Image (cartoon, rainbow, N blue to C red; front, side, top):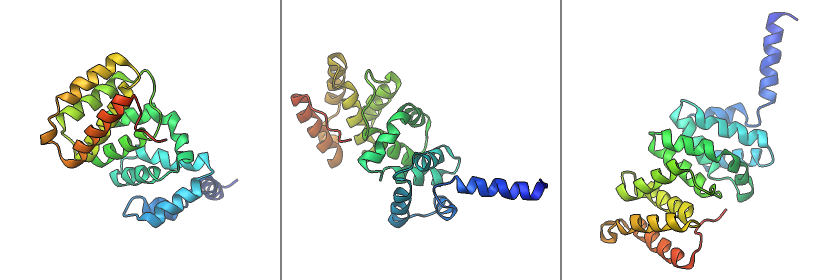
Length: 199
């Protein structure tokens, strides 16, 4: 086989293995809207290969592509979202390594939509506890850290006690409304021993 036909064949084969059309992949590197998100989630809903394709984008060097891929995954249905459960360790690793605020918030959102490993990863628990007390990130991110830390500590009495101490260190009067509400909801859930997660 000549070199040029072989290259064309390889390109066609590669494109045929792609679930997400090239035009949508290109759009993921720029501004996207809900129409594109709905189209992508529709195309990959019954395809593990398609989900893997969108998931692989979160490790790209293009920050916009990463953010858009994560945004798409936050729109997975509860059923589709189960596919991400096996990726939990990789996603936690990315949380601990990222310096990008949007990536961080979206990753934490995705992690909150799945059952967390028990016992929890110590480095991830420490990260969430530190963030909920220091509140260095935006309120939405801190809220997710507060909720994730609660879920990781909930089933282990010693950790739950440590969590309560950390929660008591946060002065409610100094909190923005979203964090104040989250703290209140967690305290209620804690009294009943309930989870706040839905997955």
